[in-house]
Structures are given as structure tokens and as C-alpha cells.
Length: 204
Image (cartoon, rainbow, N blue to C red):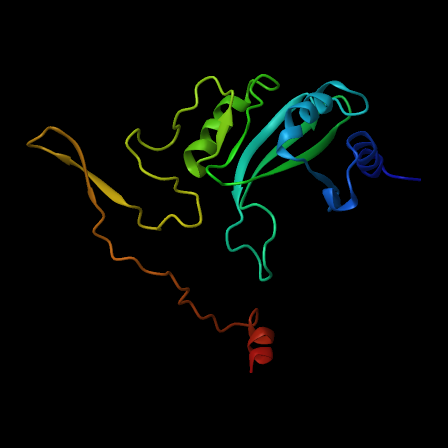
């Protein structure tokens, strides 16, 4: 007899014509990959239809897959991930949409499906530079209005591009080129206790 989570996975595959690679069941969770043009119709069906009724958007975030993994990455660099909850069926679902970055990563807004997506999408735009088409007020949320770049992208320098300070003569905050030398952080802690003895022997 199939479990509830396996039944959900089968229903998703049947309803949205998903291949096995696009509907993954792992660690008691279901993740589906959806093409960006089909996002709006898919999330509307997930919210309104049986046996889904994912009436709540729990979280929305962006992911930068630049230099991901040891093998060559063949999918687009950016993805937007939606975490959904069905209170009626007590089930969760992860929806992942991969989006091309040329000229900029762009996907349709879901604020008209779940109102709470408003600030989530603003956060993803601010930190990753993902444009959400149809968003009612897409502005930066966490960084300053004059901030240049998107700090959660993998190619954004750790020290940033500019630094800011208060200028008492001008009586305002000023931006200047960053003075910190670029560097790569390397762990320098070497522990010598029983937790690491097996690892150290294998390394020898």
C-alpha cells in the first residue's frame, strides 16, 4: 500500500505530466520541477484542485547554482523555490523553477496567488536579482537604495564593492570604494581528538 507522500507524488506526475526526474521523493518530501512558462497555471492548480489544496505559501527563495557540484551543471544558473503547505491534507510540497539569466533571471510573480509572496519576492530580487514580472511593488528590501549588485550571488565579492560611513562635514552617509584586500577564507582549525582520529588515519 502506497504511503500518503507516494500517493501525492503519483497525483502530481499524473496531473502535470511530470517525468521521474522532475518529481523527486526523498527523505519524506516531494520536490517537483516546473518550467517557468507553466508556473502560474501550475500553482493555481496546486492551490485549488483536489487532491492538492496547497493553500499556504510557507517560503519562497532563490538559489544560485554557479559552480555547483563536481560535475558540469547543465541546468540554468538560477532557480526560484516555493515551499507549500496543505492544511487540509497536512502535506508539504517543494516547487522548483529554473530560470535563464540572459539577459536577467525573470519569472512570473505569484503575489496574486498567495499575497504573502510579496516580501519573499522582494527579498529574492534584492539578494539574487531575480525579476518577478507582475509584482506590484518590486523594490529592494534588505539592502540600501543605493546598493549596487546582489549580495547572495556566488560571484559577488565577500568584501562587497563599496563601503559606507557618515561624513560629519557633509552631514550624510557617503559611499567609497572598499579598502579591504580581497582574500579567500581558509579554515585553519586542526582538531586532535577522538572524533577525527578515523579521518586522520584514512588521510595517511
